[in-house]
Length: 249
Image (cartoon, rainbow, N blue to C red; front, side, top):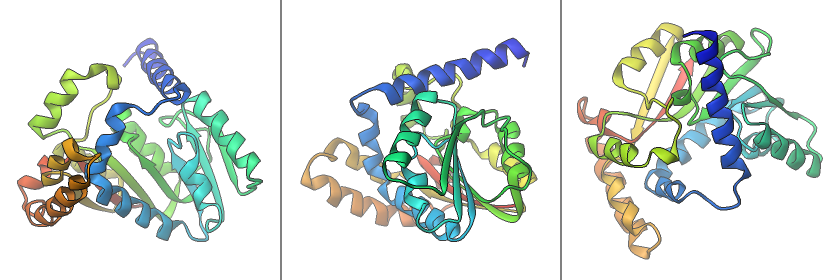
């Protein structure tokens, strides 16, 4: 990739996320994550446990809510994001709450202005699929100390129904996004000594049309039980919507 194309891609991502964080209303598609609440809970549980007493980096921190939530238990939390709008919001909230062990900065996740071996934990939600994966993984590994962990919440790219929705709603994402596919996990394994992915969101997708009704939770609960079986099968797990990955340096 030429430098000009690289800068164009970074500019598109920055502009997209600045617009997103500058908006006053929730995006309609954000409510679809109702179907994978179990994935969000598993992700956050892993992050909270790994962050206690540690130096932590939130890789793509958005407006800083999760970094701020970890402040009471982590040693120090650093949040980076390409969106200067999001970082301004994060800094404002940390200052409003007088939180001193969290810092935020605008930075490029593929070329961070952070020292080698600075963190015990790196975590991020929905960021890797916006990046050149090999470059991003090298950067994450670079800033992790030996034995450190990385935890990510990411979409997968194999389910035909989900991909059809993606193709029909291009305005909801940038042209550079690339949900993870099976071969990406081989790449992850080259950079980390351990990769433990969990898979979420297959049968639970049936709850999305009912997400604003009482029946939605019932349908989702049943779907979670079915998914506990289906997503344990080697072939079907790749049809999931979300993976939660726990990596070790």
